Length: 121
Image 1 (cartoon, helix red, strand yellow):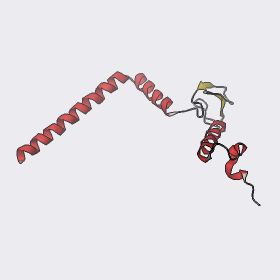
Image 2 (cartoon, rainbow, N blue to C red):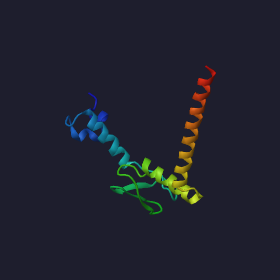
Image 3 (cartoon, helix red, strand yellow):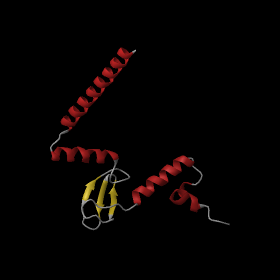
Image 4 (cartoon, rainbow, N blue to C red):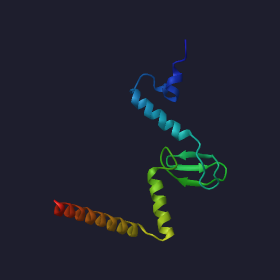
């Protein structure tokens, strides 16, 4: 007879409790937590979680803040983009102004297109 814990993996300790989807989500979170990630400084796959939100590279001893389960989250990517823009010269206020101008130009073009189509009829 085959082993039954193979399918459940690390969540086999929960047994039949809590439901399948909860155990599946817990298993994916535990896998993310214990996985090794690439260090942003030395580029080696040696980053491990020290505690919630604190990640440390075992090679170069670089410690940085990250997500609870993963060192790099979508929010951290957005923050890095904002920082890169500010270093390159364009601030977030500039980017917001440019986006607002583009939206207003687009609305003007739509209005002109509708007006021109009404005149043709």
